[in-house]
Image (cartoon, rainbow, N blue to C red):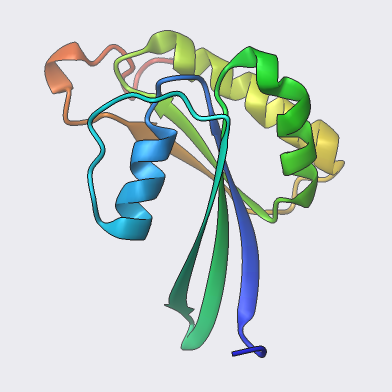
Length: 135
C-alpha cells in the first residue's frame, strides 16, 4: 500500500453551497440534507486512477469569511481544487472568482487541476445561475 499514488484535494466555496454534502456523497455515497456549517473536515478515499491505486486526501473547508486565514494554509498544500458554488445563489457564483484568485496568489502558479462545480442542480425551480450568467 505504500507505493500508492496520493493526491491532496481541497474543496472551497462560500458558506451553504453544499461542499460537505458533495464530499460526503462522494466518500460515503450518502446524501446529507441538513446544513451544519463546517470549520474543517478531512476525508480519505482509495480509488483506481489510470489503473493505479490512488489515495485521495480531501479537505472540506469552511465557507465562512472568518476562516480565510485557515483557507490559505489549506491552499498551499493542495494539489487539486474543487471550486463549488450553488446554482440557486448568484452570490456564491460571484465568490468563486475570489477563491480562484486566492488560489492563484497562494500557489504562485496556474498549472494544477481546478474543477468548477455548480451544485444543487436538483433545486431547478430555484436556479438563478445559468450557463448564460457571464454573457
